[in-house]
Image 1: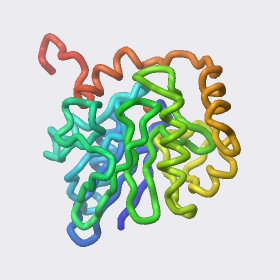
Image 2: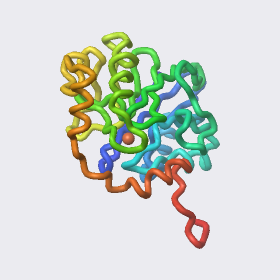
Image 3: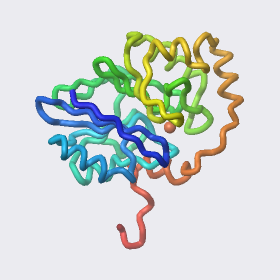
Image 4: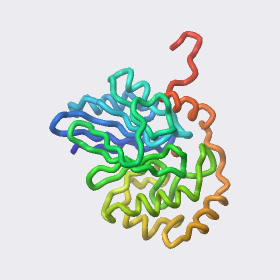
Length: 233
Ligand SMILES: [Fe+2]
């Protein structure tokens, strides 16, 4: 399997490129609008064909590139059920998505948002903002729910094999990857914490509103299309 991890420094977002060596079909997970040219150049340099774009959820902190990538490559846009209505395929827990010979299993991991899904393949899982390195996504907007996220973390993600590599949607401290075992032991929000303790931690974060939320959420429901300009550009 071809695998690359890409980073958008403005939003600290990770984008992942996974390609099937046999068919050269590829998927970008959580691409960022401003990085379309960079990502497509890499796809082309690796002699891949972009056939899919997966979003882990409707993001509030950056605009997805899914719609622009679909226009430029005819890729199929995949997102969690109840999220972006523009997605070609809305997936649910237990669904499988095939990219060439790569088979991704969909895990519903709501709580950060109600449409959050993780994509599991082989020895790795792409968790979006459900599980971050030593953290997790906030639960105070977009139908976030700390009670639900506790289940997504402890019952869904922590039931994966301990050595599963966890590739998150963001990191703000320069870390790139973790594992299920590491997070079970060292994630300060959930390791050794009861449901009530977790909910209390999440209720008391008092985070500032994401800078781009008012633009990003409506745009991302439309696969990244910002409100059309008068020129229709
Ligand atoms: Fe998010």
